[in-house]
Length: 321
Ligand code: EPU
Image (cartoon, rainbow, N blue to C red; front, top):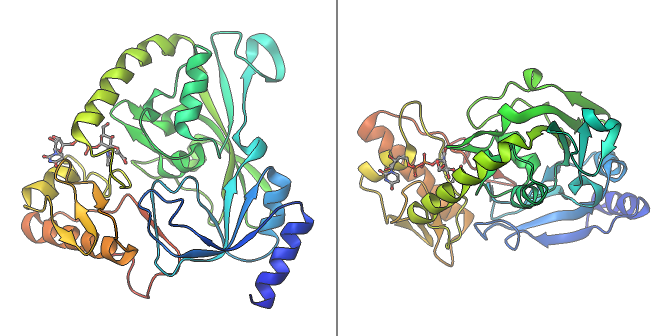
């Protein structure tokens, strides 16, 4: 281990964390590919995250790896997972007075949610409390922080429409709270300050939304199950949909369903899902993604833009495609 990494590791231990060196990342990502992280650490609060930022090593937040393509050479610097109170849920509830509350007693309020909580768990917990508002995350893998970064959504809407505020940490360790206007949500994109880490998110929720959402949810989950290969390792949609069309439709029309490079394959069930059939490398997936993009461009003059994010130590010139 280099002096720099050893020094960073010591700092993290002194701040109460347990960094793991050369941590294998293929266990975490949904594609099950990619090399190790120099250091991987779980942080339980903003103080620990500030200590990570203070090491001056590059910081990558893994979320739950459901939308990331990790390089075969792995990730240099520190990979962080948000745990502890960075997965909490509380409410700002005008009818219950100032401060944060465990439940929503009125009809409408703001759910203040740690960025590390999984979307599915957030939905389950809100559902149990009879609270709705973020049904657009139904079936979306990943964490709330990842959903903000991506402006994740489904046919039921986009998370950006429900955001009251986003609290984040800048690389210098300072905290900033941004309004949705400042975040400039677009289709599958938000404008976050470079190198920042989302720690907490305020989401508009209400009890009125709960019943309507429940109706749509069952229908939506059944649609996904019927149209997407949910039982195979993929990262969901690989490309964003181009304006007025669907990436899946275009890749399908280009005759690419079932196409294989190494251990990577374009799903027979949904052409915007790229699958690890067992022994794919990150390089196989990159080559297949590029092949699909180039073929669609040749045939239809449409340039597809990846929805998945490539992270880590890729050979120079690999990304952007
Ligand atoms: N299509 C084909 N061939 C295929 C796949 C799709 O012709 O192989 C056609 C379908 O018939 C349909 C159109 O393409 O007319 C769109 O397909 P679909 O309804 O499956 O939706 P999608 O646009 O591919 C989006 C989200 C999904 C989300 C579904 C359902 C994006 C990029 N993807 O998929 O989100 O689950 O709607 O709400 O917006 C994700 O983002 O990872 C994701 C899975």
